[in-house]
Image (cartoon, rainbow, N blue to C red; front, side):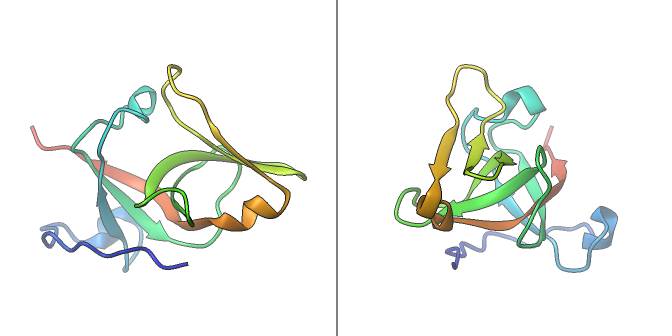
Length: 116
């Protein structure tokens, strides 16, 4: 799966600050991760990788469903994969069986930058 790149600016911080040489940032839009202290307009720093552990926050894309990458807590078991928001007012996205192949992990959240 391929995410659409929308390059806005280069970060004035070294990616090594976040423990990787090829991290990238995603601008957060919305309030789905507020209980994880990730706010609208924050810059989520993502380390590219195809898998994350249960309970980790990841940047994901959902083929044919979401028009852009989203930041969610990933939970998977033998039968399903859930993308859980860190906002108790919102519901998780649950993918079962073959639907799980619609979800692509872009990488793991390794940091957040907030402008004051």
